[in-house]
Image (tube, rainbow over all chains, first blue to last red; front, side):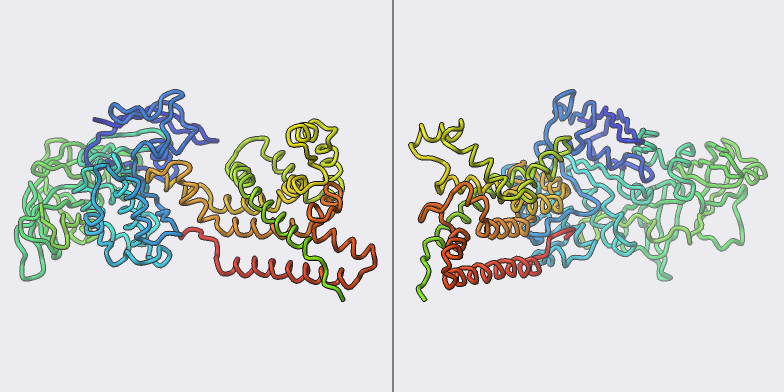
Length: 369
Length: 226
Protein backbone atom coordinates (compact mmCIF):
# COMPACT_ATOMS: atom_id res chain seq x y z
CA UNK A 1 0.00 0.00 0.00
CA UNK A 2 1.19 3.50 -0.75
CA UNK A 3 0.14 7.06 -0.33
CA UNK A 4 -0.03 8.47 -3.82
CA UNK A 5 -0.05 12.19 -4.30
CA UNK A 6 -0.40 14.08 -7.55
CA UNK A 7 -1.21 17.64 -6.68
CA UNK A 8 -0.49 21.22 -7.53
CA UNK A 9 -1.11 24.36 -5.58
CA UNK A 10 -0.39 27.94 -6.57
CA UNK A 11 -0.26 30.64 -4.00
CA UNK A 12 1.22 33.96 -5.06
CA UNK A 13 4.80 33.36 -6.15
CA UNK A 14 4.92 29.92 -4.64
CA UNK A 15 3.88 26.84 -6.55
CA UNK A 16 3.87 23.29 -5.28
CA UNK A 17 3.73 20.49 -7.79
CA UNK A 18 4.27 17.00 -6.50
CA UNK A 19 3.56 13.64 -8.09
CA UNK A 20 4.98 11.03 -5.76
CA UNK A 21 4.12 7.72 -4.18
CA UNK A 22 5.14 7.39 -0.54
CA UNK A 23 5.86 3.93 0.82
CA UNK A 24 3.66 3.29 3.83
CA UNK A 25 6.28 1.51 5.87
CA UNK A 26 8.45 3.06 8.52
CA UNK A 27 9.47 6.67 8.38
CA UNK A 28 9.75 8.80 5.27
CA UNK A 29 11.77 11.95 5.79
CA UNK A 30 10.58 14.95 3.80
CA UNK A 31 13.66 17.04 3.58
CA UNK A 32 14.22 20.48 2.13
CA UNK A 33 15.11 24.07 2.99
CA UNK A 34 12.58 26.50 4.43
CA UNK A 35 10.00 27.51 1.85
CA UNK A 36 10.45 24.36 -0.24
CA UNK A 37 6.84 23.33 0.35
CA UNK A 38 7.32 20.51 2.86
CA UNK A 39 4.72 21.73 5.33
CA UNK A 40 2.30 22.69 2.59
CA UNK A 41 2.56 19.18 1.18
CA UNK A 42 1.71 17.75 4.59
CA UNK A 43 -1.29 20.08 4.84
CA UNK A 44 -2.49 18.96 1.42
CA UNK A 45 -2.25 15.32 2.47
CA UNK A 46 -4.14 16.12 5.69
CA UNK A 47 -6.86 17.90 3.71
CA UNK A 48 -6.19 21.28 5.30
CA UNK A 49 -5.37 23.09 2.04
CA UNK A 50 -8.60 23.71 0.19
CA UNK A 51 -6.76 25.38 -2.70
CA UNK A 52 -4.81 22.29 -3.76
CA UNK A 53 -5.90 20.64 -7.00
CA UNK A 54 -5.26 17.08 -8.05
CA UNK A 55 -5.43 13.67 -6.48
CA UNK A 56 -4.51 12.19 -3.11
CA UNK A 57 -5.13 8.52 -2.39
CA UNK A 58 -4.24 6.42 0.61
CA UNK A 59 -4.09 2.92 -0.85
CA UNK A 60 -7.59 2.21 -2.13
CA UNK A 61 -9.09 5.19 -0.25
CA UNK A 62 -9.40 8.28 -2.41
CA UNK A 63 -9.03 11.38 -0.28
CA UNK A 64 -9.10 13.95 -3.02
CA UNK A 65 -9.84 13.73 -6.71
CA UNK A 66 -11.42 16.42 -8.83
CA UNK A 67 -14.46 17.70 -6.92
CA UNK A 68 -14.15 15.00 -4.28
CA UNK A 69 -12.54 16.10 -1.05
CA UNK A 70 -12.74 13.97 2.08
CA UNK A 71 -12.79 16.43 5.02
CA UNK A 72 -9.70 16.32 7.28
CA UNK A 73 -11.49 14.77 10.28
CA UNK A 74 -12.58 11.76 8.20
CA UNK A 75 -9.11 10.92 6.85
CA UNK A 76 -7.78 9.35 10.01
CA UNK A 77 -4.55 11.27 9.75
CA UNK A 78 -2.56 12.23 12.82
CA UNK A 79 -0.72 15.53 12.73
CA UNK A 80 2.03 16.76 15.02
CA UNK A 81 2.40 20.49 14.49
CA UNK A 82 5.61 22.41 14.99
CA UNK A 83 3.81 24.69 17.46
CA UNK A 84 2.17 21.68 19.24
CA UNK A 85 -1.31 23.26 19.23
CA UNK A 86 -2.29 21.74 22.52
CA UNK A 87 -5.72 22.94 23.63
CA UNK A 88 -5.04 25.54 26.32
CA UNK A 89 -8.44 25.13 27.94
CA UNK A 90 -7.80 21.45 28.62
CA UNK A 91 -5.01 20.09 30.79
CA UNK A 92 -2.52 17.46 29.65
CA UNK A 93 -4.94 14.69 30.56
CA UNK A 94 -7.78 16.56 28.85
CA UNK A 95 -5.79 16.84 25.65
CA UNK A 96 -5.06 13.12 25.63
CA UNK A 97 -8.67 12.26 26.43
CA UNK A 98 -9.87 14.47 23.59
CA UNK A 99 -8.13 12.21 21.11
CA UNK A 100 -8.95 9.01 22.95
CA UNK A 101 -12.70 9.69 23.05
CA UNK A 102 -12.87 10.32 19.33
CA UNK A 103 -10.96 7.15 18.49
CA UNK A 104 -13.25 4.79 20.42
CA UNK A 105 -13.71 1.49 18.71
CA UNK A 106 -10.70 2.03 16.49
CA UNK A 107 -7.59 -0.07 16.62
CA UNK A 108 -5.25 2.41 18.24
CA UNK A 109 -2.71 2.34 21.06
CA UNK A 110 -3.99 2.33 24.61
CA UNK A 111 -3.64 5.27 26.98
CA UNK A 112 -1.25 3.43 29.27
CA UNK A 113 0.90 2.34 26.36
CA UNK A 114 1.27 5.92 25.09
CA UNK A 115 1.83 7.35 28.57
CA UNK A 116 4.61 4.79 29.12
CA UNK A 117 6.26 5.24 25.74
CA UNK A 118 6.45 9.03 26.04
CA UNK A 119 6.90 9.21 29.81
CA UNK A 120 3.78 11.33 30.21
CA UNK A 121 2.86 10.03 33.67
CA UNK A 122 4.37 12.93 35.63
CA UNK A 123 2.75 15.46 33.30
CA UNK A 124 -0.85 14.21 33.35
CA UNK A 125 -2.15 16.56 36.04
CA UNK A 126 -0.36 19.63 34.67
CA UNK A 127 -1.78 22.54 32.72
CA UNK A 128 -0.41 22.83 29.20
CA UNK A 129 0.79 26.38 29.87
CA UNK A 130 3.15 25.07 32.57
CA UNK A 131 4.96 22.59 30.31
CA UNK A 132 8.37 23.13 28.73
CA UNK A 133 8.65 23.08 24.95
CA UNK A 134 9.89 19.51 24.90
CA UNK A 135 7.17 18.33 27.29
CA UNK A 136 4.51 20.02 25.18
CA UNK A 137 5.77 18.26 22.08
CA UNK A 138 5.73 14.90 23.85
CA UNK A 139 2.10 15.47 24.88
CA UNK A 140 1.25 16.54 21.31
CA UNK A 141 2.84 13.37 19.92
CA UNK A 142 0.95 11.26 22.46
CA UNK A 143 -2.29 13.01 21.61
CA UNK A 144 -1.78 12.38 17.90
CA UNK A 145 -1.09 8.68 18.50
CA UNK A 146 -4.18 8.27 20.70
CA UNK A 147 -6.39 9.36 17.80
CA UNK A 148 -5.43 6.02 16.20
CA UNK A 149 -4.15 7.49 12.93
CA UNK A 150 -3.60 5.45 9.79
CA UNK A 151 -0.81 7.83 8.88
CA UNK A 152 1.15 10.16 11.12
CA UNK A 153 2.33 13.49 9.75
CA UNK A 154 5.02 15.24 11.74
CA UNK A 155 5.81 18.82 10.79
CA UNK A 156 9.23 19.75 12.16
CA UNK A 157 8.34 18.67 15.68
CA UNK A 158 11.78 19.68 16.94
CA UNK A 159 12.28 22.93 15.06
CA UNK A 160 10.99 25.17 17.82
CA UNK A 161 13.16 23.53 20.48
CA UNK A 162 16.67 24.40 21.59
CA UNK A 163 19.48 21.84 21.30
CA UNK A 164 19.05 20.54 24.85
CA UNK A 165 15.30 19.98 24.36
CA UNK A 166 15.95 18.32 21.00
CA UNK A 167 18.38 15.92 22.61
CA UNK A 168 15.76 15.23 25.28
CA UNK A 169 12.99 14.38 22.85
CA UNK A 170 14.90 12.64 20.04
CA UNK A 171 15.21 9.30 21.86
CA UNK A 172 11.41 9.25 22.28
CA UNK A 173 10.98 10.01 18.61
CA UNK A 174 13.42 7.29 17.63
CA UNK A 175 11.66 4.77 19.79
CA UNK A 176 8.34 5.85 18.36
CA UNK A 177 9.60 5.61 14.80
CA UNK A 178 11.11 2.19 15.44
CA UNK A 179 8.16 0.67 17.20
CA UNK A 180 5.19 2.42 15.65
CA UNK A 181 3.04 0.38 13.33
CA UNK A 182 1.80 3.64 11.87
CA UNK A 183 3.67 4.95 8.83
CA UNK A 184 5.17 8.36 9.44
CA UNK A 185 5.88 11.28 7.14
CA UNK A 186 8.47 13.35 8.93
CA UNK A 187 9.20 16.88 7.73
CA UNK A 188 12.50 18.44 8.63
CA UNK A 189 15.11 20.81 7.31
CA UNK A 190 17.78 19.06 9.35
CA UNK A 191 19.49 16.20 7.58
CA UNK A 192 20.80 14.97 10.93
CA UNK A 193 17.26 14.40 12.13
CA UNK A 194 16.16 12.74 8.91
CA UNK A 195 19.26 10.54 8.91
CA UNK A 196 18.53 9.39 12.43
CA UNK A 197 14.85 8.68 11.98
CA UNK A 198 13.97 7.90 8.38
CA UNK A 199 14.37 4.87 6.16
CA UNK A 200 13.03 6.66 3.09
CA UNK A 201 13.76 10.16 2.03
CA UNK A 202 12.14 12.66 -0.29
CA UNK A 203 14.05 15.85 -1.07
CA UNK A 204 11.94 18.89 -1.92
CA UNK A 205 13.20 22.10 -3.45
CA UNK A 206 11.07 25.05 -4.50
CA UNK A 207 7.88 23.05 -4.52
CA UNK A 208 9.22 20.14 -6.59
CA UNK A 209 10.51 16.69 -5.67
CA UNK A 210 14.23 16.62 -6.41
CA UNK A 211 15.05 13.10 -5.30
CA UNK A 212 13.31 10.23 -3.58
CA UNK A 213 14.60 6.88 -2.39
CA UNK A 214 16.00 4.89 0.53
CA UNK A 215 17.66 7.24 3.01
CA UNK A 216 20.94 5.29 3.25
CA UNK A 217 21.28 5.33 -0.53
CA UNK A 218 20.43 8.99 -0.87
CA UNK A 219 22.71 10.09 1.94
CA UNK A 220 25.67 8.27 0.40
CA UNK A 221 25.04 9.59 -3.11
CA UNK A 222 27.51 12.29 -4.13
CA UNK A 223 24.92 13.76 -6.44
CA UNK A 224 22.63 14.41 -3.48
CA UNK A 225 25.28 16.37 -1.59
CA UNK A 226 24.36 19.78 -3.02
CA UNK A 227 20.69 19.11 -2.19
CA UNK A 228 21.44 18.25 1.39
CA UNK A 229 24.00 21.01 1.74
CA UNK A 230 27.70 20.19 1.67
CA UNK A 231 28.23 21.01 5.34
CA UNK A 232 25.40 18.69 6.32
CA UNK A 233 26.10 15.85 3.92
CA UNK A 234 27.16 12.51 5.28
CA UNK A 235 26.41 8.83 5.03
CA UNK A 236 24.65 6.78 7.67
CA UNK A 237 25.97 3.31 8.45
CA UNK A 238 24.92 0.60 10.87
CA UNK A 239 27.19 -0.40 13.71
CA UNK A 240 27.06 -2.99 16.49
CA UNK A 241 28.53 -2.52 19.93
CA UNK A 242 31.28 -5.08 20.51
CA UNK A 243 32.95 -4.05 23.73
CA UNK A 244 33.13 -1.35 26.39
CA UNK A 245 36.72 -0.51 27.24
CA UNK A 246 38.08 0.66 30.56
CA UNK A 247 39.55 3.82 29.03
CA UNK A 248 36.05 5.13 28.29
CA UNK A 249 35.82 4.06 24.69
CA UNK A 250 33.17 1.92 23.08
CA UNK A 251 34.24 -0.49 20.37
CA UNK A 252 31.86 -0.87 17.46
CA UNK A 253 31.86 -3.23 14.51
CA UNK A 254 30.93 -1.85 11.13
CA UNK A 255 31.01 -3.79 7.89
CA UNK A 256 34.46 -2.46 7.00
CA UNK A 257 36.15 -2.92 10.34
CA UNK A 258 36.24 -1.55 13.85
CA UNK A 259 35.51 1.91 15.22
CA UNK A 260 36.14 3.41 18.64
CA UNK A 261 33.85 6.10 19.99
CA UNK A 262 33.56 7.91 23.31
CA UNK A 263 31.49 5.77 25.60
CA UNK A 264 27.98 4.98 24.37
CA UNK A 265 25.68 3.76 27.09
CA UNK A 266 24.19 0.67 25.55
CA UNK A 267 24.56 -3.05 25.96
CA UNK A 268 27.02 -5.13 23.99
CA UNK A 269 25.32 -6.42 20.88
CA UNK A 270 23.11 -3.36 20.45
CA UNK A 271 22.96 -2.00 16.91
CA UNK A 272 22.88 1.67 16.14
CA UNK A 273 23.33 4.04 13.26
CA UNK A 274 26.32 6.25 12.84
CA UNK A 275 26.42 9.33 10.73
CA UNK A 276 29.69 10.09 9.11
CA UNK A 277 29.81 13.72 7.98
CA UNK A 278 31.50 13.92 4.57
CA UNK A 279 33.60 16.89 5.60
CA UNK A 280 35.15 14.94 8.47
CA UNK A 281 36.54 12.13 6.32
CA UNK A 282 40.21 12.32 5.28
CA UNK A 283 41.60 10.00 2.61
CA UNK A 284 45.07 8.46 2.40
CA UNK A 285 46.42 6.13 -0.28
CA UNK A 286 48.60 4.17 2.16
CA UNK A 287 47.55 3.20 5.63
CA UNK A 288 48.67 6.15 7.74
CA UNK A 289 51.19 5.45 10.48
CA UNK A 290 51.92 7.58 13.50
CA UNK A 291 48.55 9.28 13.35
CA UNK A 292 46.47 10.02 16.41
CA UNK A 293 43.23 9.13 14.69
CA UNK A 294 41.68 5.91 16.01
CA UNK A 295 39.21 5.26 13.27
CA UNK A 296 40.67 4.24 9.94
CA UNK A 297 38.74 2.07 7.50
CA UNK A 298 39.97 0.47 4.26
CA UNK A 299 37.85 1.74 1.38
CA UNK A 300 37.60 1.64 -2.39
CA UNK A 301 36.64 4.72 -4.39
CA UNK A 302 33.41 4.16 -6.27
CA UNK A 303 32.66 7.61 -7.61
CA UNK A 304 34.24 11.04 -7.78
CA UNK A 305 32.04 14.03 -8.31
CA UNK A 306 33.62 17.40 -8.85
CA UNK A 307 31.33 20.32 -8.22
CA UNK A 308 31.68 23.97 -9.01
CA UNK A 309 34.43 25.64 -7.05
CA UNK A 310 37.34 23.87 -5.40
CA UNK A 311 35.34 21.04 -3.78
CA UNK A 312 34.78 17.44 -4.76
CA UNK A 313 32.76 14.63 -3.24
CA UNK A 314 34.12 11.10 -3.26
CA UNK A 315 31.93 8.08 -2.68
CA UNK A 316 33.66 5.18 -1.00
CA UNK A 317 32.82 1.54 -0.57
CA UNK A 318 33.57 0.62 3.04
CA UNK A 319 32.71 -3.02 3.51
CA UNK A 320 29.09 -3.25 2.48
CA UNK A 321 28.44 0.41 3.28
CA UNK A 322 28.85 3.53 1.23
CA UNK A 323 30.34 6.61 2.81
CA UNK A 324 31.11 10.06 1.45
CA UNK A 325 34.21 12.20 1.76
CA UNK A 326 34.39 15.86 0.89
CA UNK A 327 37.82 16.85 -0.42
CA UNK A 328 39.32 19.54 -2.57
CA UNK A 329 39.75 18.89 -6.27
CA UNK A 330 43.44 19.44 -5.76
CA UNK A 331 43.62 16.52 -3.31
CA UNK A 332 41.60 14.32 -5.64
CA UNK A 333 44.14 14.99 -8.39
CA UNK A 334 47.19 14.66 -6.11
CA UNK A 335 46.04 11.28 -4.78
CA UNK A 336 44.93 10.09 -8.19
CA UNK A 337 41.50 9.20 -6.86
CA UNK A 338 39.23 7.54 -9.36
CA UNK A 339 36.80 4.64 -9.25
CA UNK A 340 38.52 1.39 -8.27
CA UNK A 341 41.36 3.02 -6.36
CA UNK A 342 41.93 1.59 -2.88
CA UNK A 343 42.48 4.03 -0.03
CA UNK A 344 42.14 4.47 3.72
CA UNK A 345 39.47 6.70 5.19
CA UNK A 346 40.40 8.50 8.38
CA UNK A 347 37.32 9.41 10.34
CA UNK A 348 38.13 12.28 12.64
CA UNK A 349 36.61 10.98 15.81
CA UNK A 350 36.08 14.49 17.10
CA UNK A 351 33.57 14.92 14.27
CA UNK A 352 31.60 11.91 15.39
CA UNK A 353 29.93 14.16 17.89
CA UNK A 354 27.41 12.75 20.31
CA UNK A 355 24.49 14.48 18.64
CA UNK A 356 25.51 12.91 15.36
CA UNK A 357 25.59 9.41 16.72
CA UNK A 358 22.40 7.48 16.44
CA UNK A 359 21.24 6.82 19.99
CA UNK A 360 20.77 3.13 20.74
CA UNK A 361 17.30 1.85 20.15
CA UNK A 362 15.20 1.36 23.23
CA UNK A 363 16.78 3.58 25.83
CA UNK A 364 15.57 3.35 29.39
CA UNK A 365 15.79 -0.39 29.63
CA UNK A 366 13.37 -1.21 26.86
CA UNK A 367 14.38 -4.25 24.86
CA UNK A 368 17.28 -3.65 22.53
CA UNK A 369 17.22 -4.74 18.94
CA UNK B 1 -42.26 60.06 48.30
CA UNK B 2 -44.17 57.21 46.68
CA UNK B 3 -42.19 54.25 45.46
CA UNK B 4 -42.31 54.12 41.69
CA UNK B 5 -44.18 51.32 40.00
CA UNK B 6 -41.73 48.44 39.49
CA UNK B 7 -43.63 47.02 36.50
CA UNK B 8 -41.39 48.80 33.95
CA UNK B 9 -38.32 47.35 35.66
CA UNK B 10 -39.50 43.74 35.28
CA UNK B 11 -40.60 44.38 31.74
CA UNK B 12 -37.19 45.81 30.94
CA UNK B 13 -35.33 42.86 32.45
CA UNK B 14 -37.55 40.44 30.54
CA UNK B 15 -36.97 42.29 27.29
CA UNK B 16 -33.20 42.36 27.84
CA UNK B 17 -32.99 38.68 28.75
CA UNK B 18 -35.07 37.52 25.80
CA UNK B 19 -33.23 39.79 23.37
CA UNK B 20 -29.86 38.54 24.63
CA UNK B 21 -30.92 34.92 24.26
CA UNK B 22 -32.21 35.45 20.72
CA UNK B 23 -29.13 37.39 19.68
CA UNK B 24 -26.75 34.75 21.01
CA UNK B 25 -28.53 32.19 18.87
CA UNK B 26 -28.73 34.38 15.76
CA UNK B 27 -25.52 36.34 16.22
CA UNK B 28 -23.15 33.41 16.79
CA UNK B 29 -23.42 31.96 13.25
CA UNK B 30 -23.18 35.46 11.76
CA UNK B 31 -20.09 36.26 13.83
CA UNK B 32 -18.59 32.84 12.99
CA UNK B 33 -19.14 33.39 9.31
CA UNK B 34 -17.67 36.91 9.45
CA UNK B 35 -14.62 35.63 11.34
CA UNK B 36 -13.83 32.85 8.87
CA UNK B 37 -15.11 33.90 5.47
CA UNK B 38 -12.99 35.14 2.63
CA UNK B 39 -16.15 36.21 0.79
CA UNK B 40 -16.31 39.52 -1.00
CA UNK B 41 -19.64 40.38 0.58
CA UNK B 42 -18.10 40.25 4.06
CA UNK B 43 -17.67 44.05 4.34
CA UNK B 44 -21.29 44.53 3.25
CA UNK B 45 -22.55 42.24 6.00
CA UNK B 46 -20.19 43.86 8.49
CA UNK B 47 -21.51 47.30 7.58
CA UNK B 48 -25.13 46.17 7.90
CA UNK B 49 -24.61 44.60 11.31
CA UNK B 50 -22.83 47.75 12.50
CA UNK B 51 -25.54 50.15 11.22
CA UNK B 52 -27.45 50.32 14.52
CA UNK B 53 -24.30 51.77 16.10
CA UNK B 54 -24.41 54.91 13.97
CA UNK B 55 -28.09 55.35 13.06
CA UNK B 56 -30.20 57.52 15.35
CA UNK B 57 -32.60 55.10 17.09
CA UNK B 58 -35.47 57.09 15.66
CA UNK B 59 -34.43 56.18 12.11
CA UNK B 60 -34.37 52.47 12.88
CA UNK B 61 -37.60 52.86 14.87
CA UNK B 62 -39.28 54.72 12.03
CA UNK B 63 -38.50 52.02 9.47
CA UNK B 64 -39.49 49.28 11.89
CA UNK B 65 -42.76 51.06 12.56
CA UNK B 66 -43.51 51.04 8.85
CA UNK B 67 -42.30 47.45 8.39
CA UNK B 68 -44.26 46.04 11.31
CA UNK B 69 -47.46 48.10 10.94
CA UNK B 70 -50.62 46.14 10.17
CA UNK B 71 -50.73 47.80 6.75
CA UNK B 72 -47.37 46.29 5.74
CA UNK B 73 -46.96 42.78 4.41
CA UNK B 74 -45.23 41.47 7.55
CA UNK B 75 -47.41 43.25 10.07
CA UNK B 76 -50.57 42.42 8.09
CA UNK B 77 -49.64 38.75 7.92
CA UNK B 78 -49.00 38.70 11.65
CA UNK B 79 -52.39 40.36 12.31
CA UNK B 80 -54.17 37.79 10.12
CA UNK B 81 -52.46 34.84 11.81
CA UNK B 82 -52.47 35.90 15.46
CA UNK B 83 -55.07 38.66 15.66
CA UNK B 84 -52.53 40.95 17.35
CA UNK B 85 -50.34 43.72 16.03
CA UNK B 86 -46.55 43.72 16.08
CA UNK B 87 -46.39 47.44 16.67
CA UNK B 88 -47.15 48.68 20.16
CA UNK B 89 -46.67 45.19 21.58
CA UNK B 90 -44.00 43.41 23.64
CA UNK B 91 -43.27 41.14 20.69
CA UNK B 92 -42.62 44.17 18.49
CA UNK B 93 -40.18 45.44 21.11
CA UNK B 94 -38.30 42.14 20.99
CA UNK B 95 -37.99 42.36 17.21
CA UNK B 96 -36.81 45.96 17.44
CA UNK B 97 -34.33 45.29 20.28
CA UNK B 98 -32.88 42.31 18.48
CA UNK B 99 -32.02 44.43 15.47
CA UNK B 100 -30.93 47.39 17.52
CA UNK B 101 -28.57 45.43 19.80
CA UNK B 102 -27.16 43.19 17.04
CA UNK B 103 -23.70 44.82 16.87
CA UNK B 104 -23.19 44.36 20.60
CA UNK B 105 -23.45 40.62 20.11
CA UNK B 106 -21.84 40.16 16.72
CA UNK B 107 -18.77 42.34 17.14
CA UNK B 108 -17.35 40.87 20.37
CA UNK B 109 -18.07 37.36 19.13
CA UNK B 110 -16.44 38.00 15.77
CA UNK B 111 -13.35 39.41 17.49
CA UNK B 112 -13.21 36.40 19.82
CA UNK B 113 -13.52 33.89 16.98
CA UNK B 114 -10.83 35.72 15.03
CA UNK B 115 -8.53 35.57 18.05
CA UNK B 116 -9.09 31.84 18.42
CA UNK B 117 -8.20 31.50 14.75
CA UNK B 118 -8.05 28.38 12.64
CA UNK B 119 -5.08 26.63 14.20
CA UNK B 120 -6.78 24.98 17.21
CA UNK B 121 -9.65 23.95 14.94
CA UNK B 122 -7.23 22.27 12.55
CA UNK B 123 -5.66 20.47 15.48
CA UNK B 124 -9.11 19.25 16.56
CA UNK B 125 -9.92 18.10 13.01
CA UNK B 126 -6.72 16.04 13.05
CA UNK B 127 -8.07 14.33 16.17
CA UNK B 128 -11.19 13.27 14.26
CA UNK B 129 -13.46 16.07 15.52
CA UNK B 130 -16.17 17.12 13.04
CA UNK B 131 -17.20 20.77 12.48
CA UNK B 132 -19.90 20.97 15.18
CA UNK B 133 -17.72 19.03 17.62
CA UNK B 134 -14.87 21.46 16.93
CA UNK B 135 -17.13 24.44 17.57
CA UNK B 136 -18.60 23.13 20.81
CA UNK B 137 -15.44 21.65 22.33
CA UNK B 138 -12.72 23.99 21.07
CA UNK B 139 -13.92 27.26 19.51
CA UNK B 140 -16.68 28.08 22.01
CA UNK B 141 -14.61 27.45 25.16
CA UNK B 142 -11.66 29.39 23.75
CA UNK B 143 -14.02 32.23 22.80
CA UNK B 144 -15.68 32.13 26.23
CA UNK B 145 -14.70 35.65 27.08
CA UNK B 146 -16.23 36.88 23.84
CA UNK B 147 -19.52 35.19 24.72
CA UNK B 148 -19.45 36.78 28.15
CA UNK B 149 -18.72 40.24 26.79
CA UNK B 150 -21.35 39.86 24.07
CA UNK B 151 -24.02 38.75 26.55
CA UNK B 152 -23.36 41.46 29.07
CA UNK B 153 -23.13 44.25 26.52
CA UNK B 154 -26.26 43.11 24.69
CA UNK B 155 -28.21 42.83 27.91
CA UNK B 156 -27.07 46.20 29.19
CA UNK B 157 -27.58 47.95 25.89
CA UNK B 158 -31.13 46.63 25.58
CA UNK B 159 -31.92 47.93 29.04
CA UNK B 160 -30.77 51.38 28.05
CA UNK B 161 -32.64 51.70 24.78
CA UNK B 162 -35.22 54.41 24.40
CA UNK B 163 -35.69 55.82 20.95
CA UNK B 164 -36.53 52.61 19.14
CA UNK B 165 -38.87 51.52 21.92
CA UNK B 166 -40.70 54.81 21.86
CA UNK B 167 -41.19 54.67 18.09
CA UNK B 168 -42.24 51.03 17.85
CA UNK B 169 -43.76 50.32 21.22
CA UNK B 170 -45.17 53.54 22.57
CA UNK B 171 -45.94 53.61 26.25
CA UNK B 172 -48.36 50.83 27.24
CA UNK B 173 -48.02 49.69 30.88
CA UNK B 174 -47.14 45.99 31.11
CA UNK B 175 -46.64 45.80 27.36
CA UNK B 176 -44.12 48.34 26.18
CA UNK B 177 -43.52 50.68 29.08
CA UNK B 178 -39.90 49.87 29.82
CA UNK B 179 -37.78 51.67 32.37
CA UNK B 180 -36.37 54.33 30.08
CA UNK B 181 -39.88 55.23 28.91
CA UNK B 182 -41.09 55.33 32.50
CA UNK B 183 -38.34 57.80 33.40
CA UNK B 184 -39.25 59.93 30.40
CA UNK B 185 -42.88 59.94 31.49
CA UNK B 186 -42.00 60.87 35.07
CA UNK B 187 -39.98 63.82 33.83
CA UNK B 188 -42.74 64.91 31.44
CA UNK B 189 -45.24 64.89 34.27
CA UNK B 190 -42.77 66.64 36.60
CA UNK B 191 -42.55 63.76 39.06
CA UNK B 192 -38.83 64.19 39.57
CA UNK B 193 -38.57 62.04 42.70
CA UNK B 194 -39.62 58.89 40.83
CA UNK B 195 -37.50 59.89 37.84
CA UNK B 196 -34.51 60.29 40.19
CA UNK B 197 -35.00 56.90 41.72
CA UNK B 198 -35.29 55.04 38.43
CA UNK B 199 -32.46 57.01 36.82
CA UNK B 200 -30.10 56.42 39.71
CA UNK B 201 -31.05 52.75 39.70
CA UNK B 202 -30.25 52.47 36.00
CA UNK B 203 -27.00 54.39 36.44
CA UNK B 204 -25.79 52.15 39.24
CA UNK B 205 -26.90 49.04 37.38
CA UNK B 206 -25.07 50.05 34.21
CA UNK B 207 -21.92 50.84 36.13
CA UNK B 208 -22.01 47.50 37.92
CA UNK B 209 -22.53 45.64 34.65
CA UNK B 210 -19.57 47.33 32.99
CA UNK B 211 -17.46 46.78 36.08
CA UNK B 212 -18.34 43.10 35.92
CA UNK B 213 -17.25 42.92 32.29
CA UNK B 214 -13.90 44.53 32.99
CA UNK B 215 -13.23 42.48 36.10
CA UNK B 216 -14.07 39.25 34.31
CA UNK B 217 -11.90 40.29 31.40
CA UNK B 218 -8.99 40.53 33.81
CA UNK B 219 -9.77 37.27 35.54
CA UNK B 220 -10.14 35.18 32.40
CA UNK B 221 -7.45 36.15 29.95
CA UNK B 222 -7.88 34.95 26.39
CA UNK B 223 -6.29 31.55 25.87
CA UNK B 224 -3.78 31.94 23.10
CA UNK B 225 -0.85 29.74 22.26
CA UNK B 226 -1.06 27.74 25.47
